[in-house]
Image (cartoon, rainbow over all chains, first blue to last red; front, side):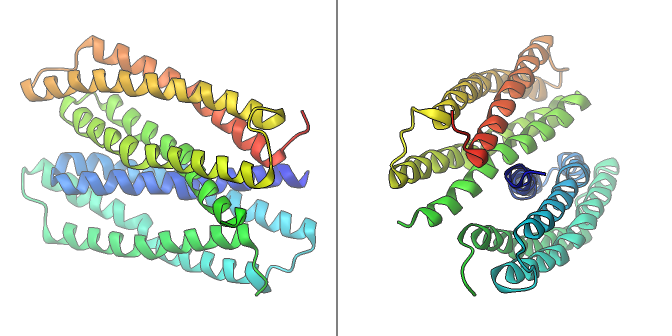
Length: 155
Length: 155
């Protein structure tokens, strides 16, 4: 496929991962802040679905088009700035995989609290603390990867 | 500033405009499908926050860096592919402004229904139907702009 079309798909995939990912986190965070178990349960369930239908295809699209473009240009992927970007990508993946099941757990705990009209349990707070503190390094690493992709510094 | 540093901000802002809007539409759609006035009103409030704290700053970031980058390369904003991109952005901006108004009006109905414990009125769904319909041309126009920005065709 033409290189520029691959690049367009690459950027759209990055948009799903970064832009949609950021708004997913935004909705989860502001629902969490209300302390309303019913809203939290509904939103966390949406987060699980959104991760599956937006973020996961975005990650696959990024990798597929990224490897194809590197192949087209004959750029070795394990050298220079691209190697740094890939290392960061693996790091983001390690932060993101638990982020898949943490909202699923937050959803179950919040849904139970809502059904029993009980306060949100301590396990819910711990789950959200993990989600929050794994989200930040992943977010910053994504910004760093975008910077590397644009600047392509000689490393 | 080096145009490449501006480009990083430009690409990330554009990702938040398009990707963030996809997330906003997704969470609002899920809440509306549930027809629960309390969840709809609470989610609608987060949508307003997301428009103000994610979309609006990202639009400002795209516009500011875009004008600066065009200036750095001596490109006219009103000619060739960039002129078409500007026309598409105008369409998208009009849809977005209309969407803000529609959503504000719909949200007041949802908040009133949630406060009174009554079901969502038919007018709520009529307003939101137009909101979702406007999302399509707006999103397609932005997709077109992404394509133009990458391919930069001679027009």
